[in-house]
Image (cartoon, rainbow, N blue to C red; front, side, top):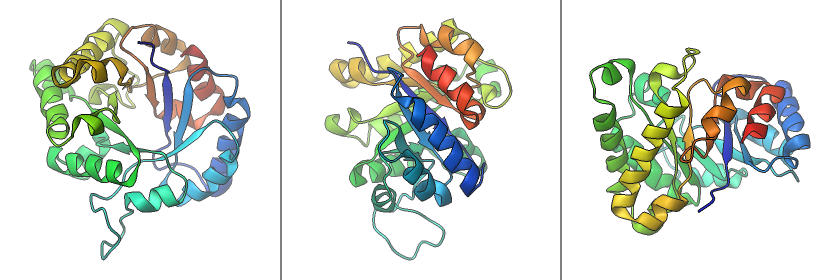
Length: 250
């Protein structure tokens, strides 16, 4: 089955109202020339501004995280899925390594956030990946399976079919190090195999992205692998020329 590539920009905690609107506009202008689906995920306070800049374009809007709670209430500082939908989001990143490591989001919390996203009608981009220590100790597969199964066990087949998964080796994020295309393919195949245990048809249709220092000069090689369906792009998504070059490679 041919899966449409997805190139998702995770802008993290960067930018300003003017700068992010300009970046979104530059991406929007060129979006129609790319076969890949394009997505940008700005900081929460700029979602409205970026959404306005993307209006009428083919670029999708997403968020970088959401609350595990499904209803509004007394949760100071949190943003629930319904609020993200209300301001035009279609996707939300869940379980990014920075959320896991810096903010203590364990597998159980990530599973609840995936459930909250699905309940709101958002498409979760579930991030999984191992640290350098885990990789060096031969724990890569065990860590990935633990992270995946925590979510899969809480999903119905219909919900499982809604997921996008992003493999982000923690040792490659922002370090300039990148998994080789062969290594990325092996891990993506492992992830697809874990989905196939639940449902082979869903496994064949699920988009699995690579995230870990993707740049214009390595994107084509990574995306040429059969189980790599695009990228979750960090630093390179903050420059429209680089982001669009990566999209062209897909």
